[in-house]
Image (cartoon, helix red, strand yellow):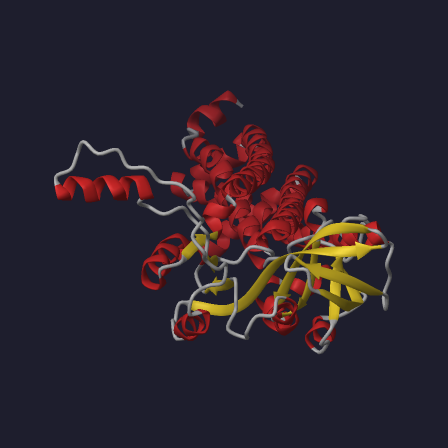
Length: 424
């Protein structure tokens, strides 16, 4: 019986071939546009997210200079109260700021402990320092980032923003420097040129430009440069254990806030998680994603209403056929199955066409040239070719067409054959 019902559905479908093709094309267009739009929007979101998140570790461990919790005046008053001398007036002068270092205390021990944590995916130590670049008689303010180039690339995609060199070149260079593109333009230097760097302590060093770094954020590119971890420690005349930042990448990003608090208590350091550091940016990314999903769902719903209208009109035009089917022994349930089969056949063909169309559109967008001075490594429009968009499109198409065919099918199952035949 099921095969017979399917055969009848195919016959009715062929009888209204033009309308059926239009409905299938509508579904295909909706799914194709959903796949292309979702891939493009999420690819663009990934690009924008990367501009921030690729420079932000999941957890940043550092040491921050903070004022003493108990000030000298408060401490003196506490001593007087303890001695029972509340009437005396304390006088405090010539207070010197507390001497402290920016480096993380016991950094190597903390790194060893983090490597044993099964929740940690990777660690990249870092040395930050303020310096001056000597451009003729002018001193240009800058920031040196001493990094483990290979780990920095693995955790934070460092190589995606390099021009003229690779992470291997930087890792192998003892006195090489990768300048921010804006900083290099200020000093009018090119590959192979030598630049002089002065530290805050007054020491001067000569470094060789081996490449440029361009992230697309001018404020960052105008002051930053990158050297190896050992080079940065040599500039500051510090030992190999002197590390100002420990960048941690987790296996589960959602655990970052809780683990940052845990590390702060455990190691007595400052720990900043990625969600706190980029709260406003995360909000913007969520809104963009929501807009893309809403537009995509609307496209699929429009296709569903098109199928509903076509099947509704088909029922009115096929009342005679429905009456004959029921008069010859087909039940209302059989008629309902016939028209649901109609909608599902349209949905299946539309889904297949939508997959093909969406894939072609996504590949086409991915090959459109895209040149932006702030992102020289980006040559085409970003598209996310994730399989989930194809699966969601097919599932939504089948569900939508089923629902769109269900209501007309229920109406067809209630047709009274006696009234139809009598009316004829």
